[in-house]
View 1 (cartoon, rainbow, N blue to C red):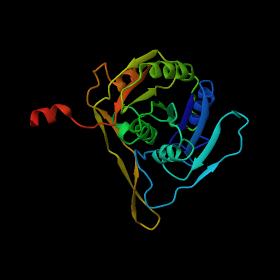
View 2 (view 1 turned 120 degrees about the vertical axis):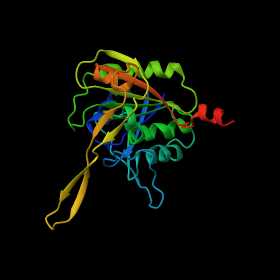
View 3 (view 1 turned 135 degrees about the vertical axis):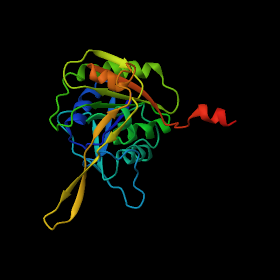
Length: 249
């Protein structure tokens, strides 16, 4: 099995290193990851600047993996891979992450981690994004690790339809198991904090709090995470509201 791995925290982040260590058990691993953090890039692609890719020296932690970094976004990484390393054949699986921070609920539309999975889904390649709800660069992935390979094998066997990928999120600490979930409805509030620089100018930094619109719904990713479960949410690149199309006709 040929496995392509990327992330949005950049090569060297603890999450992607953890993921590579797990995935080399399943097959031949190629990593093409951003050279530095590209969080919040969603499906952004580089259109007006050249993208450069560099193969790194063999890493003694996983000598069987081929590792590249590039100057682009996570979506660029997948497109680049499909037109260079995998020009003659598609990878059997794309895995993105492990992201440092949640990609549940509305976060999925901002996520560079999942943006890479959507590019894979667009190309008919099975794809899974893994995230841990911890932004700490030294986050503890030990509770999630035992779930990574079994979930990957399970989801590959399910053979998702074209355009569908999986968004897997895990809470911090001991886990209660897994749940298939839907995306929770909600939005971010109080997202910008105002500051004054030494010259008296005003600037803003992104912050905010997530407002859960359905805290009692037990079938959502946010409920699962809040109760100690790993959430597995199937996501689609088809954003059409089909019921409204039918009503319009």
